[in-house]
Image (cartoon, rainbow over all chains, first blue to last red; front, side):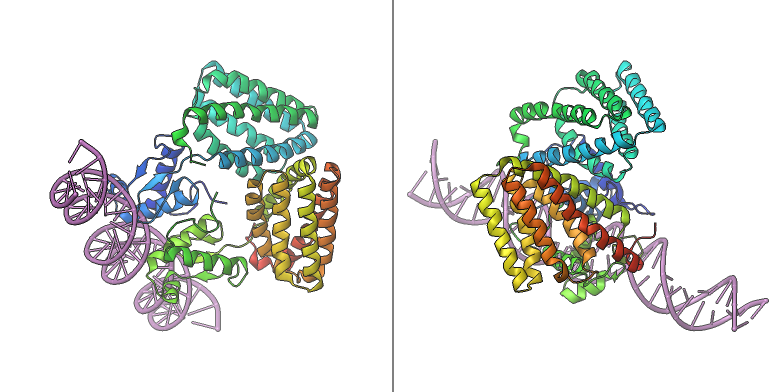
Length: 228
Length: 228
DNA sequence: CATTTTCATCTTGCATACTAGATTAATATC
DNA sequence: GATATTAATCTAGTATGCAAGATGAAAATG
């Protein structure tokens, strides 16, 4: 599936523009519905329209932009269907991962999980939200590796990224960091104890926390959503 | 995620080129490792390089082409990692779909499943492999609709397409049509009887049939595979 | 003043030309 | 004859110019 940043031995200006715009979209610096002009971007980056066009095209393929001939290119709005899809896919994948992880977790795996938890605790204490975001990804990645399905993390990351953009609209993550870490703790301990059912229950509860957030945000920011 | 064929009100030449090349790649008219030249395609379609470039870019984003600056663009080879990923994702999604379908199946759903089975039987009798291919997709789509997660079919279709390309390398589907239909029958009946576990068991067995096929094919066509 | 029409301006799509690096075949060298 | 070197030919990346449709504001009309 689509690569986050085209893996090329030689980076082109398209790669640069793509990466920057992508991060701006995902961090909501560019908001859903915002118009993007090829010429504006071209002058901004000091290049011609062509590389910008290519970058736009790539972003459109990742469903982050909507390009319509002869009309302005806009940052893609959220759609409840896409959100439901993400939610469904992630939930299904994570269940499988957790069951396998609980089956396969050994002492090395347990140690890695404990270390991940400790790092998260440290991020909580220093209230470093950005670091926690990274550690959140790392935690789920570790679970995938323990389950020996590291490719599953590709999918999780993709789906997570979509929802993360949405969640940025809501309250600061700070408030829920301790809650999320507590979830991670339960998940990790269940996996370490080979308690597959327990891990899945904890994991699903963890994912479930997103639902309320999403519902609230979508009610408050209907202009960022596609009309159904 | 990426659309099969960009949904634009006005179709551009990029759309045409994209659709055609995509179908040629998925049907193995263009084989993994084949080189594609922008200029060749441009002359073939009677356009300039630019629309071809855009189409190539779109195909690369769907992981069907590999574009490297200053080097030839080639049809993407299979990778065992990608195949495992597809397999894993599809399996996880289908389990969820089957459980929900078994829960939610009503008389209308049962009738639709029975009708789908009848059509497949007809295709078997007339040995219409192409038609069966379509009905295979339709069957899984019906299951998603009964489960009220029609978006799940997007994912299944994407993953299925990848593996289908691979399976075309193997024996004709004809040999296994009756086997597959028998699987479908078991799945449908379990769903109709609200037997979630039975449906999942039958579904997983159904998916499992791919494994042997893939293993055999990958052994025989190592040149179509990425070196690990 | 409200409505329609027109026109300037904006948008992306496409064609062409050129560049720099990668490839490959021919040549030179040993 | 095998190997190293060179040069012709390929590749995609980028710049620029023009065309056609969409947009929105200004002007004309009732």
